[in-house]
Image 1: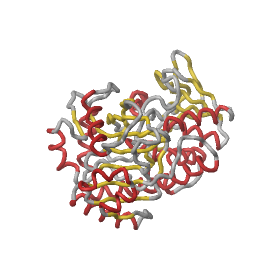
Image 2 (image 1 turned 45 degrees about the horizontal axis):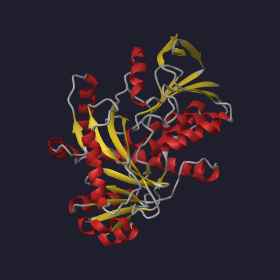
Image 3 (image 1 turned 90 degrees about the vertical axis):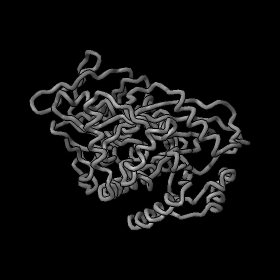
Image 4 (image 1 turned 60 degrees about the horizontal axis):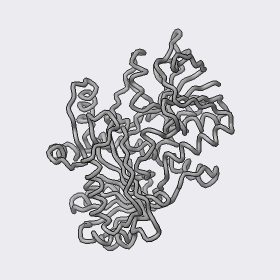
Length: 414
């Protein structure tokens, strides 16, 4: 079958990979000049298969007022005259309960464990290069209450197949010596050996190189202006005035998907949550972590990617562009310096901002739409890198008609 994939970020690229592996004739279209050039460009770098609890958790709403009053908080909300923002916010509030959060976490764990197996296959059997490392992940807690809640969550997740270790402060430092300077600030930590890290953009670029040898066609710098319908299906996409035809179409365009589907009466509830990252160049004497670290209180993640340290965090809602706000970058830099005062990077960090395409509940939309040959793979939020291979594999299976009970958990509803 001839399939056109719109979007060449990590979701689009992995989708193209598994579709091509099924023998389809695949074309990938993206408005950027290269794969992984937008949201996938400089994300957190962590592959956090066991830490997929949604942003809409039971304790989130009580923290929001404090976050909104703190200019350095991990979350900032800019109200706008945008009906979609308020629809999304209302749905988010309704999702902030324990039952919904657990239900979502169970869905995402099933998908992330599939992703984990597929990433290991990509890196270790297929030999696709992307600075993949079985680094493990340490979630550091600064508050006793937060740590106690995490211990309880660890017990629950053990029933779902997660193998995690509960550590005291000394054990945290033993696992990651770069945290020695903040030993007195650590209430405890949760360490998961099965977590990985990698370079999301490099994986996108490596998949382009691999797929070109398999006949996949790429059109970069190509703006998709609309979907052309004929009867109950899509006949073509309009790309800079040209019409590209196919038998089936997949939208992996992140926050841009609603623009294309709105004329069809399909309105996925999606919003771009802006995040930032810093990438520090390292040298052999740099005192940077080798284990992936999450500073839970500040909602910042740290991942070693080859000879670089990636620092990522912050959620800005209502800032729907990729303009880099100096004060937000300064916050990340201060937090990095406080956590790793002897980092000794070899130069100033590079900065980045991107829009994470999130659904209110945190569950991505993977599967068919009411238009017969139009499929979606969108809405992964901050977990796009972690869930990409599993999502793409599920979608390819749906298109091929392969049965998989996990697929039922993610089919889009509007």
